[in-house]
Picture 1: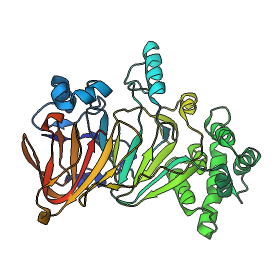
Picture 2: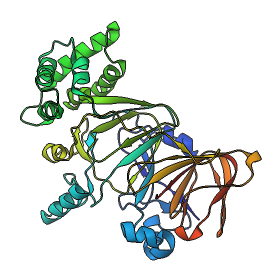
Picture 3: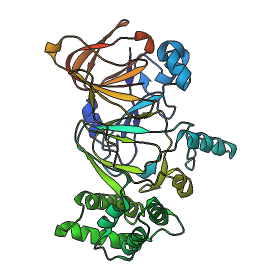
Picture 4: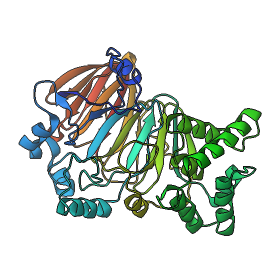
Length: 396
């Protein structure tokens, strides 16, 4: 077992206090948007004994990853575990499929676009399905609503933009109507002006305050987005999406191609080890609308909310329909004694509450709230004792 120090990501949308409070650190006033526990080159976790996790794995992949992981994913850790703490809405974004990522990465390499250039879309060749588990109340938008539901949200709005969006969806209440409205809203040649967005926000705010909103969550999200990025076309695009509210212990899975944005809260996020993000709006970062539109899945569907599967009284698992990761939560009390922690292969474990001792055949480590360890595949069985809650990312 190796203790880990996360890589800090200071994105402007991040809370200054939520992650430091969990980790027991001082609030220095700067955003701490994400804490990365993994080996991705954009932010590898530090190993307390020295070096970074990616170097540790590169030195002994067979021992730390195991033959099965190397055969399936190559000589790399296939998942990335994060803490994420949005205080303001993230960009409206989508993640590419495996094929799209590989092709996009190769094309940008051929074009001579440096990996660290602001206009680079593809930072690696991997897809980026992800799952977030709420530690506090967590707000998001994810995936397209059914066209008739989007029309209901737009009902009663008289601005020119609202009327155009509503008319298109009524004439074509299918995925193609959704695609047309979404494309028109975010594309450079057809997107609404900041004044049109402001008019839309004004009438949405008015109905929200009057208590006549058809969806309080949708209208509340619009106001939050407008407060951060006034006049941004992404505000109108968000009217087409499902609002999501997670309570602590609830999860949301976001597959490749699903347009989404996290809005507020604190959560643990696990994903395929990738940093590929294609943005549609609500950001000052690079936006490549044609590339983003090519990656979007326009099928309307409810958000994917994985229900926990209880493997024992102490451990519940959140399974996603991908091979790269799974998430487990184990809660123990002192009276339990030592309990096994399900899982296999390389794992990363993060204590989010209490203090516990982890035991493998190679030794033991005590984890207090906010501390994390990497457990190599060669350590095999893992058990825990103490009192607290432990989150584990591993590979199915």
